[in-house]
Length: 538
Image 1 (tube, rainbow, N blue to C red):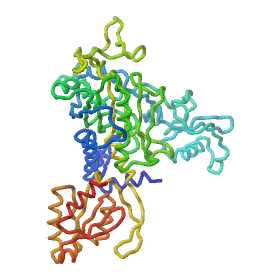
Image 2: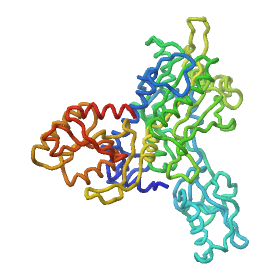
Image 3: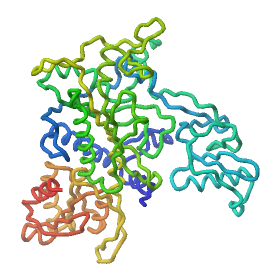
Image 4: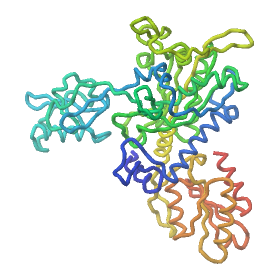
């Protein structure tokens, strides 16, 4: 199995991803994208925008769309009117449960602390662990031995009741050995923790000036539904797409960039007539998993999981998660890449009328003690009138919501490969390479003069300047050409171009493929066309 430590190490060494504020010891849950990382993530976002928005009707999805449709874009603000979050439900419901350790002073998300029941003699305790993946069981045993004051050779004297489980399945906190504690009962009772970041708008800084950084991009689309409808020539069905930053004050950010406090979303809100919504839900569910497959995530590493009825939000009639088998997870486990949700008319109706009540009826407003709506809606008419039939209704919404950071991480994990290739002397040598789809590769081609003389550098620099007009290219004339190949393989460059003595004679160059290691001659004047055609053909 691929080592996550190797991937993280490569990301820092080659300039893909750095810990935020690294020179000050880092800042948990925040990550910076380096020179190659910013190109990779930008390519992921541009591929999404091209395939889902600007060129949405040029590609053939796995199943035909129920009808012709339009796609438009939006860029809404990060800070919005506080009432947006009250009517959407985030103000009241957007929280996780956390527990604190009175001994270590650390804080944990209640449903993410894992451990096992361990018994020695007549004492049985729940031993929690901060380790992840394959190390969890090993850490539980080590901590249990230490707690019961046993030696490693006494490990067979311990007995276990069931497998690893999460803390939220344990009722007796007084029998829990916290992940960083050495005595029982140090964890507090779980309590709610709102995940929205607070900020202040204006100079006075009073309670009435409180606002929030958005926890998702979706609400900016919903509150602009009517603006988009009135300012464009679109009609239902149509989608509004947005790429933007969101912020969630995660209790325990973890697993590299998978769970961060600042992240970027690629989100679509697709508005359609209610009687077509189930068809559109199936269409977007299938189209979105096909997109990941077309860019290299395939086989057993990728799956679609339809939510069981008990998992569905109160307003949803269907949700499917597209999941990837990240290396930091146990074998057989998957992490969410994207959710495709059938949201009905819940969001538009909430912003029109007020926050709906999930406890009694999702079509009924939540009322306060006096019988008035607890959170007032905008009062604006967010219905749609069908010109052909004259019918007026609140559209249903299908929401494909993807994480740009999670997608980038998945493509990195999928691309990471270790194999052997002959060096400049023909001897097998281990190499690390990133097998990115050419559309996603940060650098599309690298240009090398074989030696720094005989006019080769001049030809190479001219070709480099020409190729830069079309795509990201790298120029390198330092060290042996074999080492230069290795450096480009490790950052995922699909093609390397070498200018050699034959180039000076017949104006041809050597083109090398990253994955197959195949080399062939191409006329100097046709290099750009050759690489473009190969990228487009994959």
